[in-house]
Amino acid sequence: MLRREDRDGILVLRLDRPEKLNAWDQALRDALAAALAEADGDSTVRGLVLTGTGERAFCAGADLTDPTVGTPAAAKARMAGYQALYEAFLSFGKPFVTALNGLAAGSAFQAMLLTDHRVGHAGVRLGMPEIRAGMPCITGSTILAQTVGAATARSLATTGRFLDAGAALALGLIDELVEPPRVVERAVAVAREGTRSPSAYAATRRWFAEMMRPELDRAFAHAAAVRSDAEVGHSIEAGVQGFLGRTTRG
Image (cartoon, rainbow, N blue to C red; front, side, top):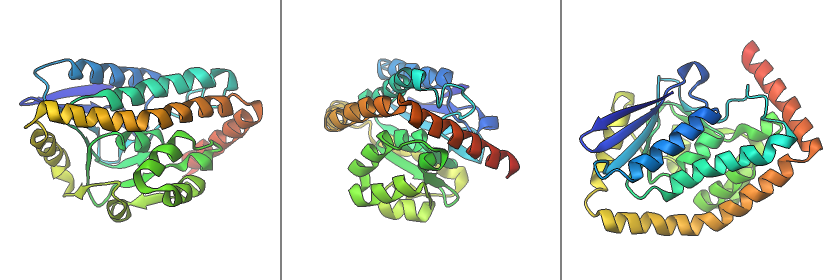
């Protein structure tokens, strides 16, 4: 579910559900949040790289086969779980780099934007297709607006369209592209470059977290309220079933 590899002080965490395109369920989200907290407190870990298993996906976002996805009664608990994961990303005090080995969608796209640097390859695709599955895009809109500006965020959130690697690079959603076999290697090198001034790095990361946290807290509260509505829950349930049906047929 979550594999660990030490690269001489740089911890590589690998999401390991390739049969699900590394989509995270509650167990994987909890395991990742715990691993980040543990690594943050471990003096032998000087930086961290997050990647996925296989060649198809970094992470497809939420596992849509989870029956609580469109359940209004479960909305607050689900949002609290995601908020805990995002907070683990925000509060990590060391160099934190994403190695994009493939698709990053939905909440995985959002979460990677909370890391410091993103390395990918020409075959990577990024997107927030929530609206195509009947889901309101609240937290994603917030993170994207702070990353690329409101106009571009609005376009991506309301169309659910995907970006290829070149378009993502031009928008600053990916920082550099290398050949696929070099993605993790380059991400480790970037993380290592950030270890030269640990205190300054930690202080800088904390400040970015302080800037992001109030808006993100507000977004999670709003998302929980919206998803608790029965009509929205019905929309999500229908949208997810349609999305899963298209995926099965496709």
